[in-house]
Length: 283
Image (cartoon, rainbow, N blue to C red; front, side, top):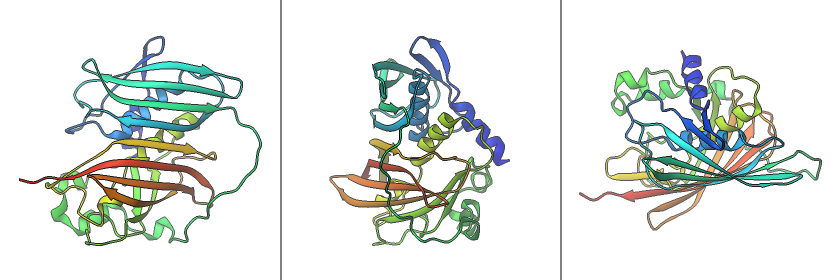
């Protein structure tokens, strides 16, 4: 069931406090070569939020430093850089085998009134009219073994634009994707923010790769290098969100990607930016 898969992701975000400012995160029971970037980013944000008494996160800036080992827990060391009247700043270092694998800096803000404007949401079909990820993969059974295709997914993804598995050379470096947590989440706003951080790493690098290759090609090495987010308005991660992404540039084995996350009602929820490695592998 998708709810069970989603509950497993929520459990990943329930860090263990082992000392003041020090937390430990578990790993999913999956056969992975490295830790999913969205997982370590989401867990890092949980660790930061656990040390803040007032305000909610409005931005995060992070760097992926080394591949994470999925066979051992991750330690999160939080530095309480600043606590002010309106803003608080935290730095988090994720550690495995005595070395930093990820670094995050997050800023928290006590909500206050101010000026308002936002970008307009693209005009797109409703998510219910689009095929599920499982349906797309079933239509191309050679892309993935049947067992993996049938595995419950915690995130429901519906592609408005052509999915990356149907690689078309020269396609525009743009992507429109509906996403939501596939189940029901508790009301905790911190959890919804951390889950959006988790899922925002999905599909984003595909935007830069799409015009040149398919994301899982054996002759391509691809991974996130950094990840930046700004949170604009309240939201629920278990409701439909439109992820509109584009890639203004790819050069020097790096692809730059931008994203806007809209609620179904058209409100701009968050903005995302990321640079990723997309290195052709020669054999």
